[in-house]
Each structure stands twice: as structure tokens, then as C-alpha cells.
Length: 398
Image 1 (cartoon, rainbow, N blue to C red):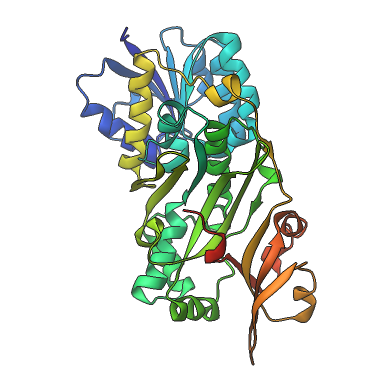
Image 2: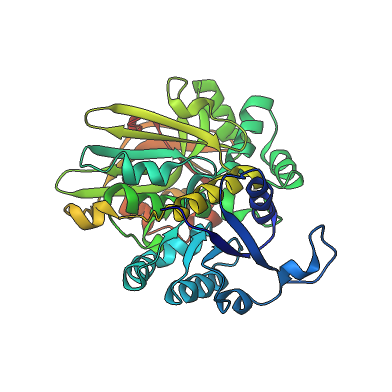
């Protein structure tokens, strides 16, 4: 039964304003924003009476039955979301870091308080991947979920490979357009993709994984040498997250740059778009594509969750509740391209075998097999080394 939603909106940045805009274009939805919580008083186009300056004003308002949390700070978001759930209010959130780091508790709070927390906008912007994993791919035939999960890094890589720009120029352009922050590390070092992958893993295989236990490495160390190598081989480099089912009820997951061939679906995913490939035992591969960033695309995903709340929808976490759980496994071997300059850096990598190597006047590289757990042991040091890592085509399964 569809019900009247009285919304308390926390955050009025790009996504918050985007949601407000798309909500005005949805007359069929019986929803009203009663209050918007913002940090500072300033001149806005909306009436002053609509705004408040403490989240408690929304959380303690008995009229409000839905809290929409759209702020960037994960700790503050956690306090707002958990307090709202405990107060018996449904919640919609787009904060992927907060959700990925606290998903186990958030699942329990929903159950204990008989409320719903939806977060479609936390994963891939306008792509409805979570709801599809919950409802359409809710069986044990799923084999892997692989994709470009971050629009900012993909925009940068598109400018490098399609427009021949160097990394610094492409990054500056992304920052000027608002796709990347002044400190871009959250996007370009793979943290944004990591949190999204952890969320997708919960809905794909029912496994809750601590983000700190997952390998993520981004594109901030990419060099002209790596770009030339990829182009000469006919590849593009993409930042990709993957979770894959292994034998004996195990899964692996990681976020790494990849050398992608033309015949792969994500080869032509460009600019701020995301692309997700879902592979299954009976249906082979299915591809989902859409904008992964921006106020209106992300706002539309938030609106979809609001509409679902109006119809009393909630995640059932089917893979957690109705199937055997999967164990996260790090003792998995992948093939990587490693570009390096110093021998002391190379010596830190425990290659099991080498299929190709090159020694040059400025840079060197090796391609070979290595265990994820051995890369994980170097996780805190990878970004400080003069190296670049990319998964090779032999590891690609989509």
C-alpha cells in the first residue's frame, strides 16, 4: 500500500539539490520534503523556513517518517542513520563508505526496528544494480560481478586514452568539472570503488566483508610508460572492481586497474559513466550501463529508493538468509603487469611465475602470477613506491 511520505533531507549539496529537482518532476509520488538540514545559513532559492541546522531537528520530528541522508562525512552519516532507524524511521542513504563499513550493524537495526534502509545510489549512480542483484539475480547461479564503479577515475582514463591527455591534465579537467575533489585520492586510489564493491558483494553472495581486508589500488601512479605500453598492445586501462565465486563456497574480491581489450564490454565505457557485467551459470553475461556521477543521475537513484519505500519495499538480504554463506578468500592467484624502476621495489613482490619481462633505460616491467594475499601484505606501501600495477587480460573472466 502506497503511503504519504514526509521527508527530512539531510544534506543539500549536488545530490541533495539533484534529488529536490527530480522530486518536483514526479507528481505521482505522494511525498513532501518537510525540512532540509544544512551546515550553514546562506542565501538559497528555497524559503528559509524549509531549512534547519541540526539533524536532531529532523530526527526528533514525529511528522517525518523518512530520513534521506545525503552528506559526505561517513561518521556523521552513521550517527544520523542509526539514530533514525532506532527511532523507527525509514532511511534512504547514498553514503557508500558509511554503509560498507557498518553494513552488519545496519542490517540488524533494520530487523530489530522493523524499518527499511535503502541505498541504491551508493553503488553505481543511476544504475539499479543493487535492486537487480536482490530481485533478479537472487539465486545460486551468479558467478561474478565486475565493473567500472567510479565515474571520476573513468573520466580521467577516458581523456588519457581517447584524447591523448596526460594524467595531470585529465585530473585537473575532472576537478574543474566537479567530477573529482581537490583531494582526489578517494576516487583515483580506488577507495570509492572498494566501498561500492563491498556493498555489491553483500547483495551478490551474502557475504559481509570488512573494506580494510580487501585489496584496492588505483590509478594515481600511472605513467606515460604505462599508457604507451597499453596503447601499443591495443588495450585501454580501466579501474575495475570484481567479486567472483570460487570453488568450495569461496569468493574473491579486489579493486585494481586492468588492461582491457576491445572485445570486453567495459572497453567502451567512457567519461563519468559506470558499467557492470553480471555473469551467471545459465545466462552467461549481462551488462548494465549508466551515469555514475552527477546530481540528477544520482538523485534519480535516490528517488527510486524513496518510491520503493512508499510501497513498503525493503531489502531481504536473500543470499545471507536463504543460502549457504561464502567465505572471502585471499589465497587466489592473478596475473599482473608490474612497472617498476628500482630493484628493491621489485624484490618485494613474490611472483610465482613470470611470462614476460622488459628492462629499459628508464622503466622496467614484469608480467606474472602473484597471490592476492601477497599484494595485500604490501597494501599500505604500494602507493608510495615508484610502480604501477594492472591486472592482465588472462585474469579477465567477463
